[in-house]
Structures are given as structure tokens and as C-alpha cells.
Image (spheres, rainbow, N blue to C red):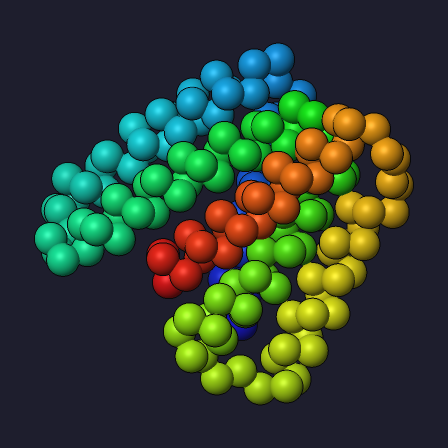
Length: 163
């Protein structure tokens, strides 16, 4: 992997974490999410002008992806409304690869080696355990956990749809 590609990956990870931190600290999480999405759409418009519209055959996938991402943003905001970032984020991001693997295997008949399965399981388990290390039994904690798990499902689905 080139240094440029590695830098891009680290930069993307940093921006993703920063966006989640800003959302968690926002007073109105739904408004903040809407503003971020609007700004992103504005930034993407020049690409539409440069490259043109995608093939019409992709429109159903684009529509499904948009719907899933709207649900994703609602669930992220809800998870952060009821729980800490250090609970919700690891659950959302740790469970999603496991669900993606499961859906790919069951519905798409993807063939995955035992080593890949073990790797995904170990990394996901480690990330999930980071979120569960400080457990409480409050109603807010349970709501945050449920929103985070629901969002892990949505992340797995948009990962498959966006392929």
C-alpha cells in the first residue's frame, strides 16, 4: 500500500471519528445531522456536473442507499441522544462487519475462508467489547444499545447495497 493511500485511509478514519464526536456534542443531533448531510450534498454537486448522471439502471440502488443512509443518520443521532459515544460507536461499528458477513453468506452465497471469518469475528468482538466494558442497567443505556444495534444492521445493509 502506498503512503498516499495509507494517508487517505487514516484521514478518512479521522474525519469519521471527528464527525461522530461533533454529533455527540451537538445540542440538536437531528439538526446537526441534517446540516452535515446538506453540506456534503453541496460539496458533491460539482462531481455530478463533471461526471454526469449515473446509469439509470443504478437508480434503484441509489434510492435504496439514500433511504438506508437517512435511517442510519437518524439512528446515530438517537444512539448518541441516549448513550455515550464510547458505548454506541463501538457497538455500531463492531457489529456491522459481523452482520455484513452473515448477510453475504446467507443471502448472497458469498464464499468466505475460515481465516477471514476468524479475523472478522476477532476484530469485531474486540471493538464490541470496548463498548460494553462500562455497562450500566439504565433505561437510557438500553435505548442507546438498541439504537446502536439497529444501526449496525443498517450499516451492514448499506454496505451490501453500496457494494
